[in-house]
Image 1 (cartoon, rainbow, N blue to C red):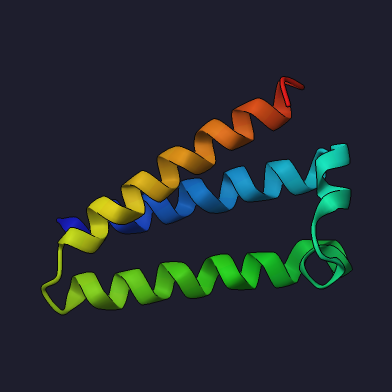
Image 2: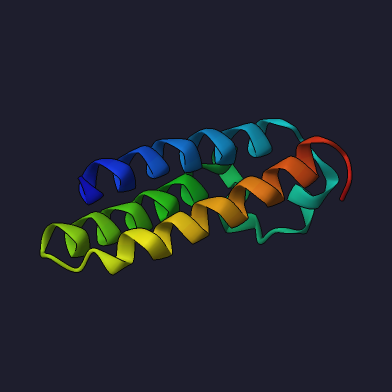
Length: 88
């Protein structure tokens, strides 16, 4: 069950990440060039590697990582909301 929730959190993270990248918000210009070059594929690759690592840890019985990834997803959701609603 923890693997399923972690995977669903990952889907949410990718959706939020892509929405922020496509918003062309000025804060994106503050990021290092290697992360946003080529449409943000490098930053999405980093996001994938984080998800993969957490999924592997959870699959090996370390379900606490799922809670950590939930906290990471929640903080990403707050940051995306701030950026997309122009409150940042």
